Length: 272
Image (cartoon, rainbow, N blue to C red; front, top):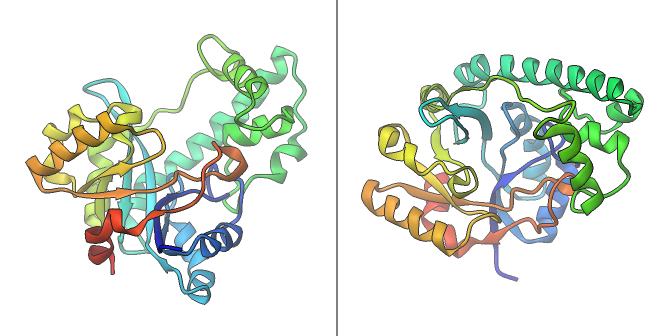
């Protein structure tokens, strides 16, 4: 089996279903040589996962996916940070308030859903909440829906509750993506725009290319059109590329961890 790499994996430190050891065991079975947990708005996954990754001989890269916003174009932006100082003082200062906001917002959503007429067992919610104790929509859905994330029944219920005019619709106030890029830089890391095709983040690159080191090219939501757009930006600005499965376990789409290492040869050399 060819060696693989995955620079976009989630655990139960944010909205993934599995703990870090289970994810690393899956990675080992898939012959992954380099992996990065990019849990949302926390640098703590790397610290927790490193000892077991070393035991399995998997090169673990400090990673994070910061939930941000492009206020000029009024759309979400996910900013990936890699190989930063694991203590990450600037990243923590920026993201810890985000985690607190998210948890408070989720508790408010639970109350709104109960007022809507659906009982939620908070003990069931807590069963799948990870080490940080932050509740995400996935944890709420787990407590009220037995169907898998990919099941149409799940999708319908999720949209009814959390989208459009649903009782728990709405989101937290995110940080400016420029602040996210700058915090990662201050902590000595590489900055990458996550899945620009998924969130239509291409336009912001021309505005902020001096703060960007790379673009996430290989992602389950990207196709040939996205590859062409990203390749053009790479040629224009000299970015490196990253990629990964965006694995969330049972809290996400069915995906296998890992992509062919040959797709990211230059990046692997950069992260050694």
